[in-house]
Length: 229
Image 1 (spheres, rainbow, N blue to C red):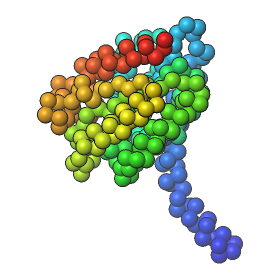
Image 2 (cartoon, helix red, strand yellow; image 1 turned 180 degrees about the vertical axis):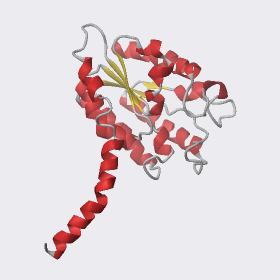
Image 3 (tube, rainbow, N blue to C red; image 1 turned 120 degrees about the vertical axis):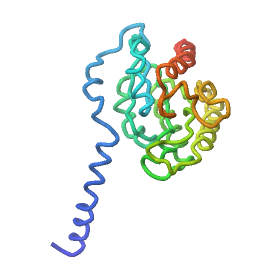
């Protein structure tokens, strides 16, 4: 074994755990069987995918009646960031051939679940998902990042609300410029002093309870109906 090959081989061995972690973390197999079980779309029933992180992941359990709506499909994975959304977007959105995808993003980027927060790159990731959807004939509904005063799992983030507001402003402006429907969950769920999510809507300040999801549903449903038209 020559010296150069030995060095490269050693580096690959050292990086193997990281590659394995990435492979697991973007959840490419999480919904593999569920996706296979969906079968062809039912005639006359719009297929709507709700795509995101734990906020989306926990939605069906907290509001089963909403997801009993024919064609409504949840594809959230807890802990994920917009970087990981991109990696599984083909598996869990494009190949399911939905009419609409509702994108919820940003929480775990700001919480730095996969590294330092880069607002511009998160914004690019959102725009890239929109571009991929459009190229495949899928209509997008962009939803605001929910209000978060902080994150229990990463208390060093002390400026979460400022980052949430800044990202929401970028995405809302992009949606308006691009003719993409935008759902402002933030304004309906933020506390009166603007520092957090309303206490009655969440047990931990990050994840909605059934009352929080009820507000989200009341705002997104009319947009879905209008978009289907």
